Length: 512
Ligand SMILES: [Zn+2]
Image 1 (spheres, rainbow, N blue to C red):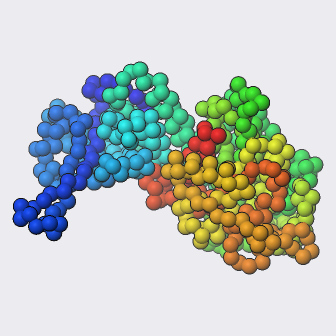
Image 2 (image 1 turned 30 degrees about the horizontal axis):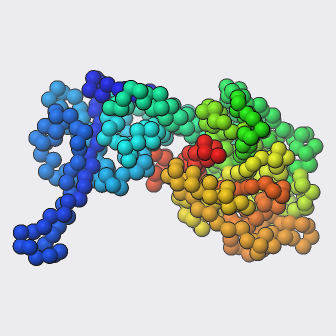
Image 3 (image 1 turned 180 degrees about the horizontal axis):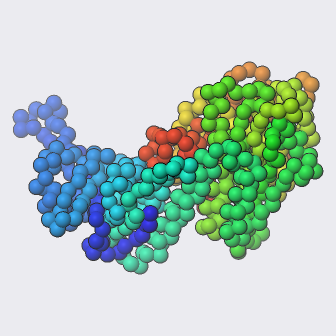
């Protein structure tokens, strides 16, 4: 699907024209003059930007009597010249936000994509607080996210008919450059979300650790100002990554630590350096602490943290943001074999701390602990990790909210602000001394699960903090809920990878 801007809205000859309709509530006083009781609120339609032929067709349509212009209330018309018009209800203009726009564009795309080959969206009626750049960005992100399908393994593919969308604007041509940039950035984010979703949705027998690293290497070759280094088993042994290697012990495939570095063209000593770390468990059986059958299904999703971080990194590089970014992806599966790590094993982490592994299914923190410690070597200004770390985060926050933990409130606040900008749900949870103490073992420095069953997400975060070097600002994002099956968002597939949190991270990297 091609999306392009047009500054000549009247001359577009697409099959379908999409307009919006808002409503505002007008207070009507009854003739009886008795107060309050007889006054009623009536919804009045607001569509100042419509051309005359649309107003005329709408007035003649029978449904117009019942049409209230509420969000999601759409009406299809045929104009006198035979062109099709769709009026998208957006509800109260005062409550119109980027997220309302994203959701209504998603619903509109679903309604038209199999009926029309091309369509023009008349932007002037879809402006959020009069802001063209933000509105184009939200619209384009939504179109990319909604049109995504994972059909590479289907013998019959469902092809969408819609091949072109024109966003027609009444803005002056002098604004073209900034509007084109907004469109281009949103397309980049949309494409990178697709890359992440494709990785997460791919089957684990196809995307094993070695192939995953190769795929990233192949993709990253096309990125400017990026260096790539891949550590295998031998290199990780040299790095003394005893925790990471213990997770890989039962695997038929080698572990991989993919290390990407982007240095912007005009980097100076003042250029900020951000480290992104992602958990990449291509499949998690639980190891000897084997998951029961129903919980093991979909564990290909356990590498969503790494796909999320790679996608955010990739988008930042394609936009050539003026920030240095190091991206570290810790990749392996967690399998069962005669060589797999047994519960009660004691291993030594890269930073020398000893860890008693009481549950081999709490493996993400073992991989992340060694990788975040490795990432600390470069002394980044901030280090952020993303991981499908705990099922407990769904108990705490539901499946719709990303859990945030941090040792630095300034960093946490920046991430929360970016989540708000991106309209993604994120909530900060604490790491308290009691959580840290609960991760201490009797026979080793630490153990990989807490003593009590509660607070699992916070204790997972408390464990990882042991491997962050002093003075490094660190934040941990638990995406076990938001990374998958976000069907409540019309621009996400009901089943499968969501790509949620990528937009928050790109916003953070833009504003750092
Ligand atoms: Zn696990």
